Structures are given as structure tokens and as C-alpha cells.
Image (tube, rainbow, N blue to C red; front, side):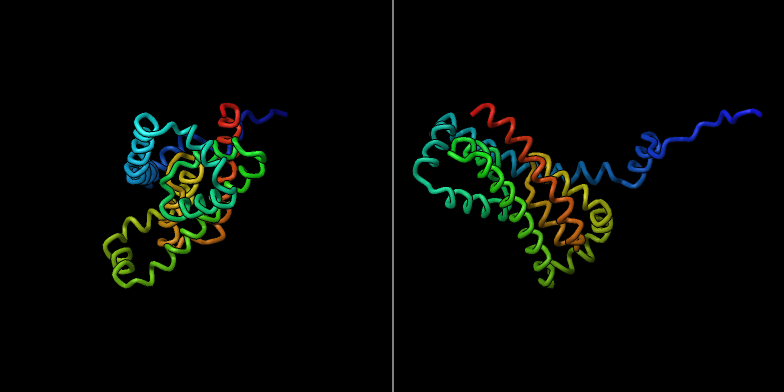
Length: 206
């Protein structure tokens, strides 16, 4: 009896996936989202670099913070930062955690507060929809963009959670677009992965 020589095709085919993402505008959506979020990040990085080279050494500033501020004060400030735009690089706080007496605990708390800050931003976005002018602008003038964002919102959140981009902004937009809260909570857990990876790298340097 002859055996069939037909091979079963793998369930994931990169070429077909690439074609699908290209036709549906997935790549354009991700690139545009990154472009729109990068300017404020670059501005903050430039300001921090200027402070580091012309005003005060960042490492000295971190040591001063460890010596003068209680841990709960630094953590509270970080939570506010991660809720309001999240423009202060979390790497500074990760380095601070590495200088404390309980680095793993503080790193875990920083990751948690970053996640909670993003969650707060998400709900701020949901509440903002109650503003008539904003609601009309999103539903009418940005109808096409809304369709794409609601379809690929999970990717936008994942990008904000893993890459050095403002997680708060991605969460705020997700809330405005009524992205399902359970889906946000699940995808947002990638924030803990980012802090674990960055923490391992930064702890080796501080």
C-alpha cells in the first residue's frame, strides 16, 4: 500500500502571516503608534542627559535619593510618574532599587506600581470618554483609526509594556478606545517581564 507523500502544512506560516498583517494595516498601525510616542520620550532622555553631564551625576542623585528619601516616598513618586504620562524612564528607579538594602523586593514593588499606574491610566481614559467633545472627536473624526486601534490594541499595549515607550500613554489610549479591561489586565502583565529583564541587566552594573 502506497503511503501518501503529502506533508501537513504547519499551522503558522510566516509568509502568509506577513501578507495578512501588511494588507490589514498592522505594520502601519504599530509604526505610527511608536512614532507618535517617541518625541516626548526623546525629550525626557535629552533632559536627563543634560542634567547628568552639566548639573549632577545621575548615579550620585540616586545615592542621594536612597540616603534621604524613604522607600515609600520613592515608590509613591514612581506610581504618580507611571500614571501621568510615564515619561520618567523606569530604568532610573530600577537602578535605585539596586542601591537599596532589599533590591529584589523594591524591584518587585516598582513593577507592581508600574502595572497599577498603567491600570489607573486605562481607567482615566475610560472616564475621559464622558467628555462630549472628546467622545465626538474619537467616534466621528477618528472613526477609521478607532477600528484599527480596537483591532490591534493588544499589540499597542504589549509594545508599551515591553519596550522603552510610555506604558501610561498606551494604557490611556486603550481606555479611550474601550479596549476590554480583562484583555488589558492580561497583556499588561508583560510589564513584569520587562522589569525582570531590565532589573537583571541593571543590577549587574550598579
